[in-house]
Length: 310
Image 1 (cartoon, helix red, strand yellow):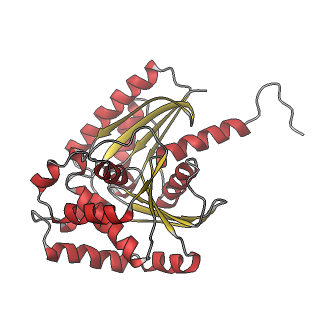
Image 2: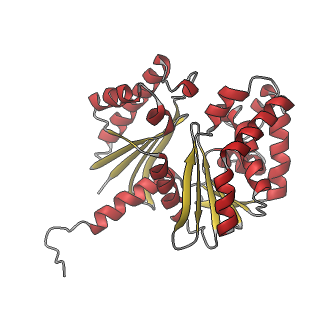
Image 3: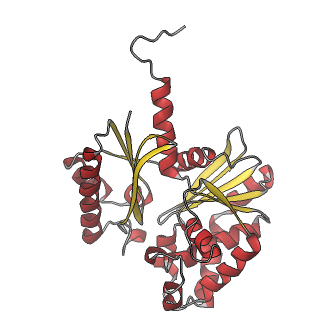
């Protein structure tokens, strides 16, 4: 069986074509910026909608070329919160992409499945995925997810609400911290109960942190990597205090994340400090790998012609 997974994120759309978790045939990422302009007003602006549909047409052509058997497309925060999200879903259906708009809890579940596929979870761990529209947290151990929740504190949302100076002003910085403080009390309660000792960042901004820590070079085709927490903190401080131009010239920081990486750094710093976490790792496996793992699991469990069920 050949599968295509489309992850329609708030900032980026991802296409993954595979025959198994270890048999990736094709993957690509497109900077669609679906949440541009009015994500906090729960609207997809016309320019962003057109970019999204144009990207899906390109994805569909690639999928057809690879003769895929099953397509699963999932949309997250930008589409599920937009008043015109169903209009986008309908336009995508016209070109043969049938989108499932998933809840934040389902999104967290897929992220957990993706990170688990790395083999990285060997202790009680807090997984964090900072998206454009939402951020998901999962507390887990090697056996199962213990607690999970999605919050509307994605990088695009917070940037549009608070980040208006260059560089970020102290007042804006404090406003973001205050917002996190008011939003995340139940995360703190859950961590006090389960006591995770490791923070795992799922893909996205954490891949940029890893590249910056690796002298601007991508870390290659690995499922996970440990990040030196003290060096991360030094990089984070530099990112937060830099101007847009200074960040744009940092080797290893892609243009899409030049500004949003500031928000990601503030969220990560807050979580590390408030929860007193002393270990930090990257999982390059994220939501799309979790979706793929689910598809493979369904295929394995589905009775095949000629099989016997006892």
